Image 1 (cartoon, rainbow, N blue to C red):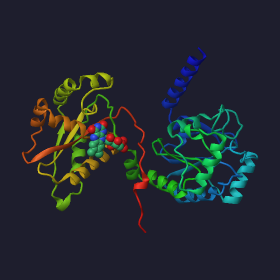
Image 2 (cartoon, rainbow, N blue to C red):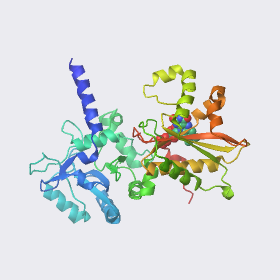
Image 3 (cartoon, protein in one colour):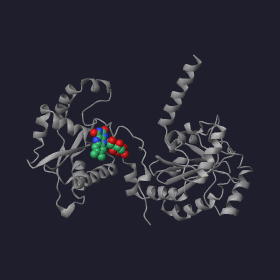
Image 4 (tube, protein in one colour):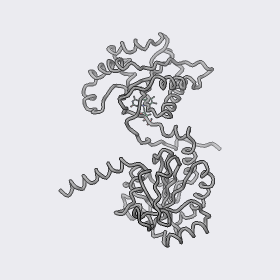
Length: 388
Ligand SMILES: Cc1cc2nc3c(=O)[nH]c(=O)nc-3n(C[C@H](O)[C@H](O)[C@H](O)COP(=O)(O)O)c2cc1C
């Protein structure tokens, strides 16, 4: 019984967190006045738990440098002094503020916890029973990704924390002072930086989120659940136009594009797919159609005798990024193409596309209004090397 209740409360907690966004939380300034985070809508936020007597305290000067460089472009740093790590943030609210100003010339505000409506500020708690709801939310959005193992400091932190708890890395708790969360202009918690991460990485993240084009690139994710709402014709036209404005070798434009708005055609070919994959479709309670459930698809064709794939890929990325900027979701699809080309019963679909004889269907882009917000899948930065 107790276990069931615990499970239920955990589910309620997760549901509550997922129903919230960053702008639903409220904190306090140093004098105890409520500070609703909604006042930062449209800004890029760096939320950091700090301490004045920590080995990382000198990061204050780097944070201040970032603040000076990017504040006018829309960066706000929300600094939460926190005494939970080695009790390295002692002293009163005034003492902490004086320390930051005198030693590091800090101009961004220190923020606190405290009950709504009560004029009292207390240092925020980021872990444990009294975790502030803001931090519960931040941790639910971006868990612990590990310390950098290529840095001495990262290795030292890992050794120290593992000595205290061998499974310390298995939970999303804040590990130490100067953990940072980067919030996009639309309120998404896009990155978490551990205190041992390079400040240059933090700066790259901030610069990316401040720039709408770069932020759009980073926000795109493959969407596989869509609302039951077709994309307006003009918007599909815009996507096609953005697509064909991609670069191509010698401007040969070696692509043929078919934008499918015919919902019956999609439904009919899905019926063929359903018959061939009955068990798999039955297992998927969200199944709407064979194109990852999107109401519209864009079919991209390349020359039948090869070539043009690179150009066609660039066209597709233009389309997907344009869609992202227009509030649409997309998913690049290879699987359905293999099915369509291998299945004689789907021939009517290919015929309807009126693809010239010297071209073949290469890949499909699913497009529609998203009904999910997938998290970013990890990217392997070690595949990139800078040759200096
Ligand atoms: C050439 C290509 C083929 C793909 N085929 C499929 C597919 O058949 N089904 C699918 O669900 N996703 C497909 N994807 C999407 C990838 O799974 C997705 O891009 C990748 O996991 C990275 O996730 P992200 O797009 O959310 O960043 C394809 C992507 C590419 C580039």
